[in-house]
Length: 213
Image 1 (cartoon, rainbow, N blue to C red):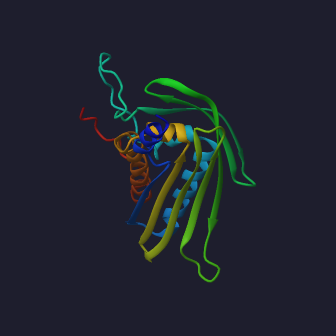
Image 2 (image 1 turned 90 degrees about the vertical axis):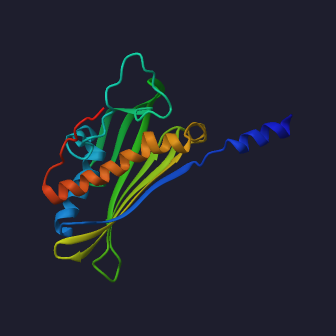
C-alpha cells in the first residue's frame, strides 16, 4: 500500500517552478523603454493598484452568468487581493500583504510578497541592461519568483528585449496547478503584461480591448 501511494504521488507530481520566456523587439529606443520598465517595477512594489490603469489593462475576467461555476480552467481561477503596502525608496525594497483566492474561496490570508529591484550591466560594457525584480514570500504557498527585463539597443529606434518571468510554487499549490490551469489562469497574464509594456512604450498608451464574449 505504501509503495502504491508513493507511485500515485509521483504520477500526479507537477513542476514547482514554471516560466514565461519571450524574446522580442520593441519599436522604440532603449531610452524610451527603460523608464517604462522602471515605472512598472516601482508601481509593482509600491502601488500595484495603479498598474490596472495601464500595465494590467485587459487582464480582467469577462463576466459570466451567475449559474456558471468557476473551474480550474477559468482565467480567474486564482485571484490576488492586495492589502497593506510598504516601500523603501532607498533600498528599492517593497512588501505587500495579499489574500489568495482559489475558485472564489480564500485559501490563504495575509501572505506577504517581498520584492527587491536592481538594474545592472556588464562590467566592461554599457549593454545589455538587466532590470531584475526578485520576489520572496511568507509561508509555504510560494517559494519565490524572478522577473527579468534584459534590454539592448538594436538601432537608435529599436530595442531587443528578453523577458523572463519565473515562479516557484510551494508543494501544496504546485500539486493543484495543471499545465492547462497554468496556461489559462496564469501564463496569459504575464504575456499580456509584456504586450502592454511594449504598447505603452511605442504609443504612450494601452488600448482597452473589446470584450467579444
